[in-house]
Picture (cartoon, rainbow, N blue to C red):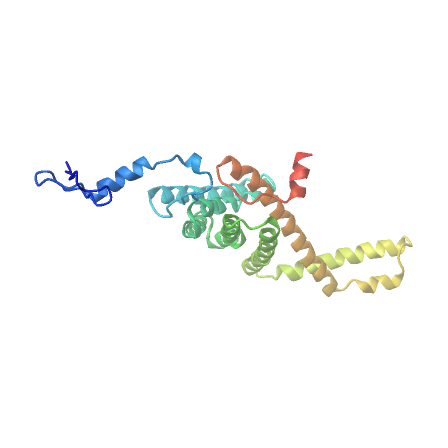
Length: 266
């Protein structure tokens, strides 16, 4: 025990440890001080940021592998037993969930594992159809959602990526079939439009000069606008489904705009 001299004042008194008593370990004193200064996290509120999960480890690897397998299974079921457009909404969600939980490295690994599994089960061409755009779309959405980006920006970027994926898919299918599907679709659309114009002219709604207005360039521009609108609607649906599902899984994403919440509440 320390011994104090009675003649010393309180400011000058310093503890003198006896030779037979070892001095306390500084680390033990620090632990005691930390224990005495403990306060529950609930009392601190937002003063301490939430700890991030480690991006490596067995739990991250197991969950990444599970979600990557789930993404492959969803694509596989939709390919052989298509239930309609419902499953297409959740194509990018497993990869986005991996990004939200474990970061960018696990998300890229999940997208790669899903692509490799589909390449083994369905062949490389169909696996590339999943990777572009749905695998990349999952990484992009997870990256933006984790940073709290607004729905307007994430939907806009996702729309461009989804439209690009449509043309990549069309290009791959054209290579597999040996025919330019874009030109084929435009020619078919031109014939349909000309047939409709002829019927309107015969009924007296249009003049004969209107038949010359249907040209390939205009039809291609209209087709491009239709692809962009379709991608926009798809991304909005994905955001809406993700907002409803991720909340139940304990993961947060940016809230929807006010007018969307009013529509859901009404």
